[in-house]
Length: 347
Ligand code: NAD
Ligand code: IPM
Ligand code: MN
Image (cartoon, rainbow, N blue to C red; front, side, top):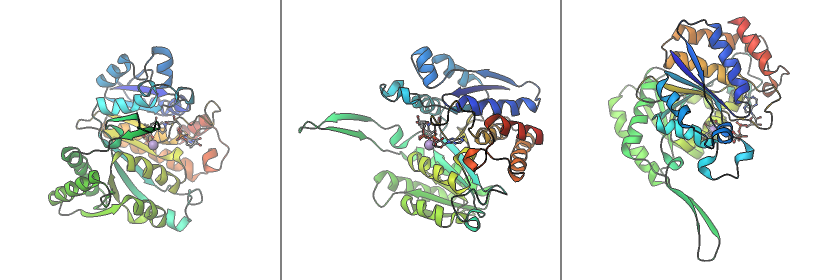
């Protein structure tokens, strides 16, 4: 079982280190961890954010544990040299089109949520975000208009087959949960969303036991803070899913808690926290590693089919939180390594 560990930039290496300690503590036989450069670090060392060796390692391993990419020093570079291109490139090259971002309130975190405790305690949802299409991967550019000003443009598009395959992931996820799927789009304005809605409605015929609803994304953003308990599975496009999942993270207490799995048709997957490289706290040892540790649990579940080990990690994190283990983002004072220690003790 080969795992590529791509720690990346900023707090990426800090949080990834703790997740690796947790994986190693399980003493799984035949587990091989390999490290690769990715992001701003790779641009500085190799002149590209996703070096060929790293991509090759990612292609030949069973799973990828990813930290974060992003470096303010690189924000002025041509787009193809920016750290973010590494994660976008991995998702596209490996055809990891389905991004699962679960959000559930942990016991004891009722007061950490940005919502009232009675509203927050009902949260148990899964965002299924499409990851290979949308305005992220359309043609884009900056052109000069006749009057001399610059105009930036990005093409938003979804083909029927792209929508169909993510819709199936959403419906299957709902089948395994509470049987409700909410498709989020902007079909009142965007043709991209009209196709999205038509295809999701068509796919629903294969899943008569799943209750499908449609919601416009502006309303969804509002409902997510008004009554998040109404959501079971949410399926949405790349851009809307990006935004709604950061919002969902604060509904359960912190962006430092939300894990994700990026999957394709096979069992190889990429696992990463939903947060970024957090340059404002990088190098200070205070980032919350829980999202990355929970991503390692998702890796064991989805790519290595080690459900017991995955739930052991999740239980250890839940116990730590119930015992009051808190990093700064959750109003506490514990540092990254101390949080890792606390989880290892409980494991
Ligand atoms: P961010 O998620 O990095 O940080 C947002 C805020 O949340 C910051 O105040 C940060 O300190 C805090 N935060 C994030 N993770 C935390 C953690 N584990 N513990 C405690 N606090 C945490 O988003 P941003 O500031 O908008 O972006 C910074 C860089 O990260 C940018 O270059 C962006 O492109 C990149 N980014 C990368 C990924 C990825 O690699 N998948 C995801 C998001 C953003
Ligand atoms: C995420 C990030 C990425 C995205 C960026 C870094 C490209 O925000 O994983 O949520 O927008 O998908
Ligand atoms: Mn994001």
